[in-house]
Image (cartoon, rainbow, N blue to C red; front, side, top):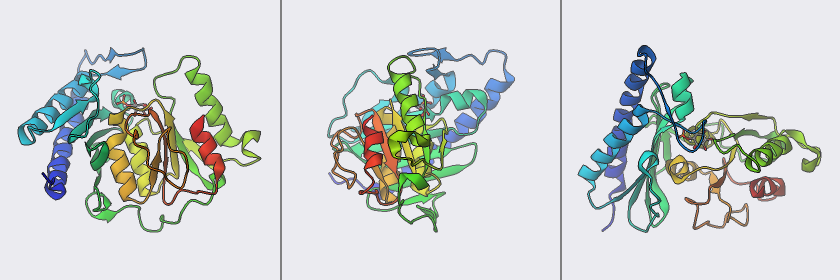
Length: 290
Ligand code: IPD
């Protein structure tokens, strides 16, 4: 049956706002309690808190009550499920868990819905800055429901890497060979001879994949590059970015002018570009392939 994207978007926005309230109050409780421990997942910098788990349980329950036929994949309960063609909710209850633990306010709940492997709903909410990014496929992307993305005045396409403000992340995979290869890319972007004398304006790291993508969508960043993201880090963001006229490239994307990558949700390697992708700037593609 045809999905009613307008009503699903409304549901998702309300869900993200409620999740945001849990995140805000969860942080207050953690900061005022003696036992605000966090657990390590894959390694000592891959962290999860009791708030991540509680928020995911809340979001799962609401989705299952409202859309019992839909599939669900969440960061904290992921057990290897594949993304099928069925409507599938893909959720990161707290994206930016390390920021959440430290009180650095770049934290978001990220709720996406994919159908046939294509993100059709995306809502990213930062409860600390009260910023809500939302989009439904074919219906545009918005900040705080009213401001259409990209934000006015920032819709000029990116001309070249040399003019770009680019987000990158260390992520949590930091052993060899991952870390040296990431650092090499940071260095290339910041101005190594590999770029033929070009260097980007500067590099940034928000510590939240979802917020990096949302900021590319809104125009504050020109690009975001990361290796090691999961579907829940990017699903909502892809919908928002594409609706804002930007493009997300995965490892299988062969041309910057935009061949569709069928595995965009599972490729782990991402380059988000605001506005129209600079198809003539091959350096972007080289960066992406590293
Ligand atoms: C992480 C953050 C981080 C990014 C990692 C993500 P989490 O998500 O988005 O910025 O570098 O790749 O896994 O663990 O905070 O939900």
